[in-house]
Length: 114
Image 1 (cartoon, rainbow, N blue to C red):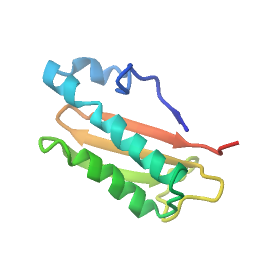
Image 2: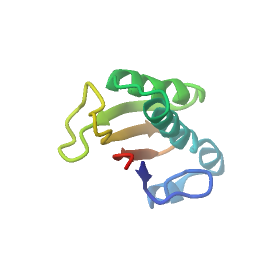
Image 3: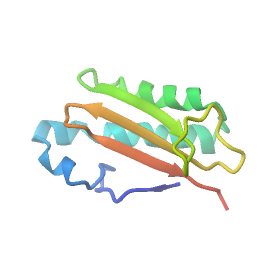
């Protein structure tokens, strides 16, 4: 797995995240936690269903009742097409977007374990 540049708590170091209020900044790392939960589901438990991985991201995000999730997706890394299954090589892009805090974006690339 590789990820974007992140702060110590996992929040992406993006220009948009610089505009978060103190409360939004405190709540934002849940996006990273959702991506990590998905990564663990794939890497440690061997989950292959893209729907199950997306559902796991949503389950974690639901812990913050004030967060409005626009989407959770599991995509083919190069074409950005929706996947139904995690490929045998393990390469996939996990994406999450939320509204308010202003478009917190998270993504993680699932790469070959070798």
